[in-house]
Amino acid sequence: MTNILLVGAVISVIVMAVVLIFQNSKVKKTLTDLEYQKKSVEEKENLLLKEARIKAKEELQNERDNLLEEERERRQEFARLEQKLNSKEDMLENKIQEYTDKDLQVQKKLDELLEKEDYLAEIVQKQTEELERISGLSSEDAKNMLLEQLKKDLAYEQMQLIRENEAKIKEDALEKSKEILSTTMQRCMIEQVVETTVSVVSLPNDEMKGRIIGREGRNIRTLETLTGVDLIIDDTPEAVVLSGFDPIRREIAKLTLEKLITDGRIHPVRIEETVEKAREEVDKKIWREGENAALDMGVMGLNKELIKTLGRLYYRTSYGQNVLKHSLEVGHIAGMLAAEIGANIEVAKRAGLLHDIGKAVDQTQEGTHIQLGVELATRYGEKPEIVHAIEAHHDDVVANSIEAVLVKIADAISAGRPGARRDTLEIYIKRLQKIEEIVNSYEGIKQSFAVQAGREVRIIVQAEMFDDLASQKLARDVAKRIEEELDYPGQIRVTVVREFRAVELAK
Image 1 (spheres, rainbow, N blue to C red):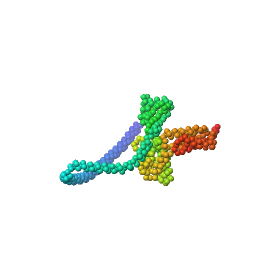
Image 2: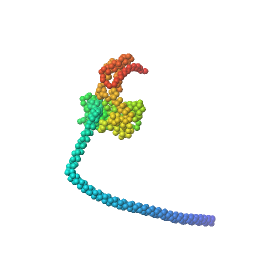
Image 3: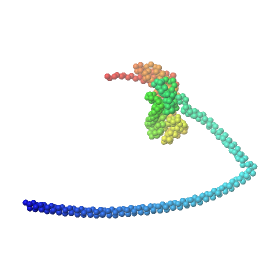
Image 4: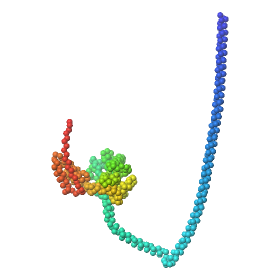
């Protein structure tokens, strides 16, 4: 048993020894493989390092070659520039030499001229002395005699010119004086200025006057300063009068005051804000009116500034007539006349619309409305035929085109129609009031209106009190009374309207 155990132990030891030997050999083989791989990696690294060094040397050599090439090119360029500068320097030296030579020549000629001048002066002096000796007069005495003779000759010619022009001056003086007086009166009619430079703003109560004035007058001063309009607050009940020559400023002041009264807050800061808003509203209104006028007339391509200036005529009046409406009327009449005779309709309408454009600025700029209108039309690119029609519509120049003559005729027709410009505004309003008073004195009159600048009166009667025959009789009676009691230009149409309406409610 013991032997068996011993043999088993020996076998186990032998097996273990064999296993250890096998493992040892395997480990040695692994170490050998690792050493081989290490050598292979080191060889590859050395190879890559050599390649990198070679590549770096090649790139460095290429860079060096490029730098040398650039340096060579720059040296060549510098050589070219140097050569060019040298050539220019030579040219400049040649030019300087030429100018120096010319300067010497000029100086030489100048010296020769001075010598000749001295020689001529000497000759003149000798001749003058000889003439004085022969004539027995000094040069001063001779000058005085010559001047006296010239004065006599000029005086004689002056008298001749005066005699020749005296008759012409006498002929033109009366006509020119009438023209000057007429133009002056048209631009500065005292009653008309009062009527067209005043606006009235209604107040809810008289206490509002004190609020408008403000503490120590600060509110009213602010309003007048910002708007350029005088505020007249007097004993007139529940009303404030705005006075100013510029209708646009007056409209801004009126809108401002109405807004302040509606808002109730009246102090300098609020006044300033409200004035700015009112000014914006008026500017928009001006633009809209100018644009509408151009569209109504069918005139296209107007400059924006010219449209805005045209819109300013909405606030301009002349002899009680709105200038924008007058311009539209002139444009339409001129267009119709042009259509009748085969002239250029577009030119006639455009010139008619713009003929009084100068009146938009004649109250703030120097010059007549014709001169200002010509300047505006020229500045904003209107054609020469339009500018000429504007210039010729009051015979400042002779009309040389059919369209210019038509604009002048249309202007006369519009200005001469009944109720347009014949009277002052006060007389015109009184006439309208008188017409309505005559009509309202009859029984059975519901309403009456004087329309079309007083050329027509429309009477609305109570239908149950008038039949057809009674309506005709009323029209005839009213027309007869107007003829007897009123003085007016042209004709007045009397129209009686009898209307019956039956109204029922469906419940």
